[in-house]
Length: 450
Ligand code: SF4
Image (cartoon, rainbow, N blue to C red):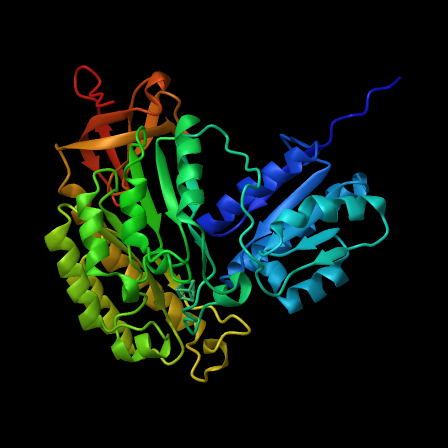
C-alpha cells in the first residue's frame, strides 16, 4: 500500500515580537496536526501568514506576498493558505480577502488555538474561505504547543492586549483588552525553556509595566521580574514594551536589583512635544519622561534606554518636530525605531484633520534619523577598546567564520569565533563601533564567562 505523504507547512511572520511568539504556537499547533516544516513554497501544502496591521506598509507587504502565492496555488490548487494576526481582526481586510479568493482560512488573534479545526474544515471543502475571527478575547488558553527551534533566546508572553488606546494605534482594536497570565504559568514556561537549553528570555506584552492588573494576587511586573530572576540556569531576562506612564520607581529598582535582568529599557517616547503627546493620548509629558530617564540612569548602572519615535502625527508643526529633536538630544537614546505616522482606519488619529503631507514626513524622518544615528554612534564609540559581556546567538549570516551576539544593553556584536561558542556568555573586546553594530575580538583564552 502506498504510504500517505507527510504534509508540509511554512509560516510567514510580519510585525512585532508578539507575532513571532504567536507563530511559534501556530507552528506547534500544525505540527501536532501532523504537518512538518517545509523548506520552500514549492514544497509546502500549507502556508500560514501571521500578519501585522500597525502600519500601511506592513499590510501592503502581506498583499504583495498573497499576489506571489497566487502563482504557487495555480500550480498546486490543493495548497492551503491561512491568514491570521492583526490584519485578520479588521472587517475591511476580511472583505478584501474574500474578494481576492486566494486565502482558504482566516483566523484572528484571539482564536489561534482553533487553527487546526479551521484547516480541517477548509480541507473538507465545505466552506471557502473558512473565516472565524473572534471580536473579543476569551480567557487565556494555556498549554498550547509551541515550536521552539532549540535557540538560545525565546519569547515568553506575560500578557495580551492593551488598555491604553494611544490615538494612532490599532493594537487595542486587534488584540483586545489587557489580560495577564498567571505567574505560575509564566514561571513554568521559563523553567521548561531553560531545561531545553534556552539562556535568555524576553518577557513580552504590549505594556509589560501594567502586568498583573486583574490578577487575583496583588502582583505587579516588578514582583514578576524578581520571581523570574530566581530561575537557575537562566542567564538573561529581557522585557518589552515598557510604557513610560506605568514605569514605576519600584520597577526601576527591581531592574537594578535583579542580576539576570538586562540593563535595557525600551520606553517609547513617541514625540517630544507635550501638545502632540496629549493628542496621541500617551499619558505623560516630556518633563515626566525626563524624570524617568534621570531615575533610571541614577538607579541602574549602565542602563541603555531606547525608544520608538513617530514623525508627522496629525497637526505636528515644525515647532513640535523640533521639540522632538530637542528631546532626542536631551535624552540621548542608545537607539530608536523611527517611523512616519501612518493613519489606521478605526483609530482616533486617522480622523484628525491636519494630516501632515508625506513629503514633510519623509523630510522630518531623515532629519530625525540623522540626529539619532549620530547619538547612537557616539554612545557605541564609548565602548571601543572595552570588554563587553556578549551572549553568543549564532554564526553571522554573511560570514560563517564570525559569530553574532548581544550585549546586556542589546547592542549587536560581531566577532571571529568558532561555532562551539554559540550559547556561551563571553567577554568580547570592542575594536570598532558603528551606528548599529559593534565589531570585536575575543581576548586570549576566548573570554568565556560561562
Ligand atoms: S501602549 Fe499605545 S502604542 Fe502600545 S500597544 Fe497600547 S495603544 Fe498601542
